[in-house]
Length: 298
Image (cartoon, rainbow, N blue to C red; front, side, top):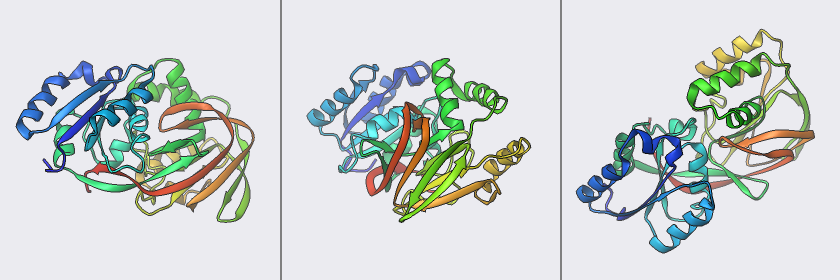
């Protein structure tokens, strides 16, 4: 274990599965005795979690905060650490673990703990959205946002639940929308089926929506899927898993450090797997090296 990590705060979402699959408190206690660190555990409840996490950080003053849950739990914790010297560790245990997948963190609780104790912590860029929210992984409007919204409303879990909602989406009448994308002083009118704001490369499913992206280059990508014929769905899936999506005919990618996207009508919107109120405008800016996060170098 790295010597500077003497105090560790664990933020665990029991509803995500961590508490059901492992006796995580015993595992943490054993590691504490072995590695010689002090720790506290906060279990999220869905009620004033942001306020409580902030209070724990202020009173305990941890060197490292380890978030155990899905992308939503990680976003909740990471948002409190932006711009601080406190490191962020990950234990993926949610329905979607896209950020941990991109950083190579394993899904088993004890294996992930080991990575957080001995792993590499890297500077990590963060996207600020509408001056209020942070995106650490992927946010989008359109197809995937509608899937995530139904996934949440119907209480689905895991890949099977996501697959069910994806199947529904593919066989529902598609809804394209007009948008105005402004990057680097240039404005472009585009019709889209989906607009993804990407800090990372891929979704937790393994689909590489942003194959050329780099979360340490001071830039982010806007990936636009334009209206496409029905048969393109199969090409899209193949290209997504083989890392060739950015080369497809109906896909357009913009790279920027600042951007604004305006929609003709309000659209469903999700940030890191969490459903947000529908939006008509998104303002984006990158914050370089805003976070120190665990990463398994590939």
